[in-house]
Length: 154
Image (tube, rainbow, N blue to C red; front, side):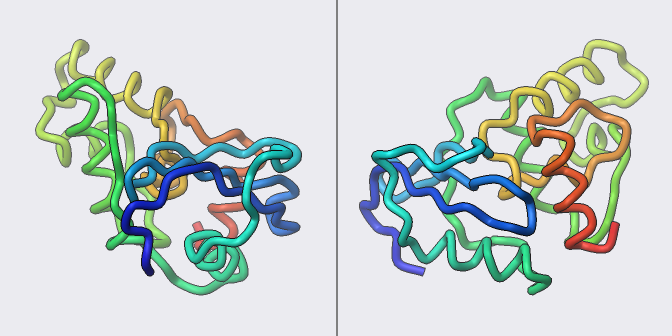
């Protein structure tokens, strides 16, 4: 997938989730994913990543490993969010397991709060798959989260 230097907003409606997937790029890196009801008027609808997301929503296995991300979050939240990429397609982890994956102590209340905060503030849901975390807050809206979990058989 060629995205080198890509900047802008791309969006497309997907029947599988009953919403739009909107992806923001800066310098070839994904900086945001959101799920508005309709595509913004100024968004482009044609992008390779949107094609891949459509195939994924249609049941094609994809963990989006080579998609470059531009995370602008505090370092501790970055560790949590980056560890989401290690959760395999079709699998679910608990908040405490995600804490361990991110190098945090699941028995420390402050560490668990850091993990929960990172999940709630995840700027790139779907590509940083918070829908694979059971029992945590999610940046992915509930109806979209349910559709993504169904697509993966969770």
